[in-house]
Image 1 (cartoon, rainbow, N blue to C red):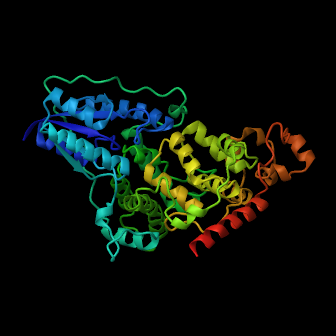
Image 2: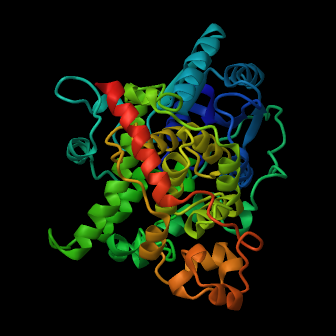
Length: 478
């Protein structure tokens, strides 16, 4: 039994179903919960939206800890140096944390382990972020999966319906609290997260309960609709560890008890669980290809003739491309720190294929503005939409932004919400104002090139240019 242990919170900002926290409580007489704020510019430093989310989430975590007789100690700097200082100040001989399956996360664990060991302190790492870890799921040849369907099949065989572990009722505090920094504040340049979200474990649990009760049964029919709240909206909570994937799976499984094998409810549940598997898949691919955030997974894509288009990129980033569904998605991201999944695919395709701007630029922008920014999912999904990743979208699939809007925002409600200058357009023209008759535009108060931009590219021409660029990739592959 250790006298004092440090619980090093990372992307596991919850008390429920937190194996690392429970181990710290079980193996030490008192526990010092800590969070280390990385220095600006560090590989693990979050973007503006996630910093805003963290500012609120850490306050929520601190309140939950105080309700159990404890509190959160905030440290600043590199994790290894901060933890060594903290362990020396509070006399801790054990540090416990949850594993992060990212290159930066694994490196931080290794550096912290070495630095702590030199001071006589043990670092214990527990699992909890993924349902099935990369080291537990390999192909018959011993490598990692690159195709989702066989991965999903093997993943399902390894999922165990274990109940989430309850939060500790009491966390024994140290006799004297170590010094720490103030809880971080929301960055002034970040979106107003609080206007749309309530970060923290409690709201994550409420959203999960509401989704399972109200939307799970309709999930296959509504999750692609940008104008409906048909998704779980749990991604920021999962990315910050305010809820575990196991909690999500357990809630879905509990809702399906007694349902026939091939019932509509089972089909809906399976469709949603598939998204959790896709999240794990991204981490598995990253574990086998640590360069995923920077280099194409398929090496022939190094020959892709990406274009230098600062004006096009700026228009995309600002939501001023002249394609309403693209602009709606980008404005939703800028204002809320989140974007509907279908919109992410549409805006990603537009950047990489219509504009031929390299996916890395889009990935960096998403990393800065997404409250659910996640190294594995961000890199994996950008490479998927660009065609260079695992089980990627075919090179010839270039989303038509007008058709995508018509299909997945059929009444134009999503566009009217986020691109209000087009709100007066009839449904027929809401996704293609550049094709609307002059009198329709005049009646709606829309002046192309003034109140709303003309398209930055002609989609039909851009598609042909993209296919020609992909021919270069095919030739490079031989």
